[in-house]
Length: 496
Image (cartoon, rainbow, N blue to C red; front, side, top):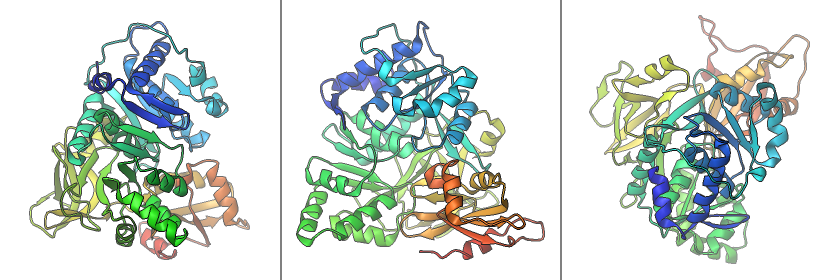
């Protein structure tokens, strides 16, 4: 049995998940996931690492499906509930998913994808609650999960993890942030990214803690949950903290004091997935009494750096290497930088690093240097603490905790019949970290309004990938080699 499941057996009657439907113990989770595993096997002995894509809202049911896939010997492939059909279809085809599982509310969205490929589609509402069969013995070296992230190629790329690498990520954070079964985390993050899946969900379940899942983030609801006084942990992206600050500031003064006192009782509040602005760090400290613990990671590596649980947490810094993680900086020539106050690319080596980019052996090989993963992020080492300087590639944009590819967005908008070409850039923004902006050149005698472009984009891209600002221009700036000069394009949009 996988170590995560073995630990769940020991926690048995402890509260595991709370969602809008009720409370569930670890026993409930194991029972439900075994039923799902039996249903997925459908008479087979083992799914043998077959990718199983699932589109389920953030809930107990999501976790049961994830664990059911693992118990059946499959590879869990979570899909984003906010993604349009076009993006879902790309992921399902690229991953060669063999089975799809979905909540009934997404059945109509997935049917056009599954029907042409004759993929079996299971509805969570139709899975028997008392189905039993012999489950395979799944070892930790097997593939566990595929997460899709936008790479520099411009299309979402599958990142493959083994159970062993997922476990390494979990145990690193358990040690660093001192999770216990007495913890109770409020979960508001998407469950198709490592931040929500590993940091917030699986760490809680490994520790025997309670994970309370909200279907989506709403600032007032989160404040109300803090006030109920049983939450010990909260993890979010900087955008969420900005929205919580705005909600607090719009509340009457007497209620603000109640909110602040409740928030102060949490033992740990973490920020990640995008750079935390210093003013947000300081404002949140004033409101809540918490110095947000900022950390650094990415899909391929999990978490690598973190400000300490006990010790100095520096605004604008992502801290120190986590337990069992090796971090180094290299210059553009690949030379290792050994002195302080030098900037270079972050490279990481750890047992939690991904196994491969799905179906892309050459890309996988190029991502490593002597066994170290090349992150593409630039950092400066100051008195032992790392400070992120930005992406080494201007085509990667971090917005609201998501990493998106400008090339992917450009590729989608280039298919619009009235667009000649476009350039997508990330522009510094206080709330989102970076906002996605697009400069567009229209075909001759054409006319388009930004609202039309936004609506058109929302039908083809995840919401966070759709540019929030469009600028219609007659031509894009280019260098002598014909490449668009994106630094010039960025200057066309105001930073906030």
